[in-house]
Length: 247
Image (tube, rainbow, N blue to C red; front, side, top):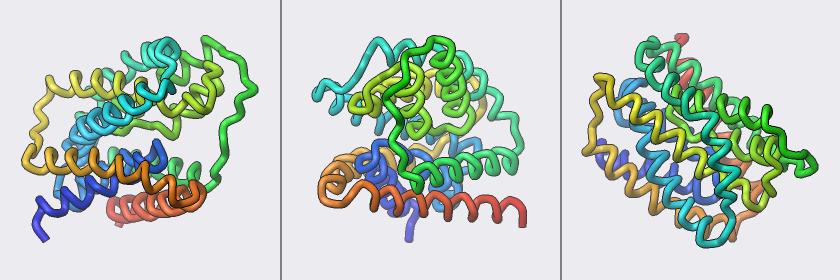
């Protein structure tokens, strides 16, 4: 199977996860780029930012049309994450590949476990500026360092720190993710990281299309079933990445 076909298939899977769950899909992009398409960890995390921006922007437009984006809360939350996102993006280009891969595997474990636990964030919390700043900074650092959106972290943080209703948390998290990813990508533009656009573009294209299919899938399959399936997949990916580095 050619790399081009693999890029199409992997992009479709990432989009399917994003469209059906609203989070977690971008975490599949980086290992797919590394193990299926031969990208180095630094190249994969940089390309991951491009994929995150494209797919999240598509989803954000849909949420904006539905009125489920709290723009002011999202921009305030994002503001705290922009400096860490830029700093972490620059730092990641100097980190050994093995360390970067293990850090990504640890994040995939966390994301997989959160999906399997299937907890809905409590909406009883009140807005807290210090908590919002801390959570926003942490999310920005994760996005910049590992090239992922971190929607599985952003959604509960928005609900808990800024009292964003759960019905608007996913849409608002997309705004935060896009802002962080744009800043992180701009920071990496000054580094010497080469990207294979002939593989990234078809990956992005099928990811965007897959996101629309994911929305339809979410209406036919129980959310708990989808979360278990993708959570299990993320744990398997994390274990494979860890073994690949340590063995």
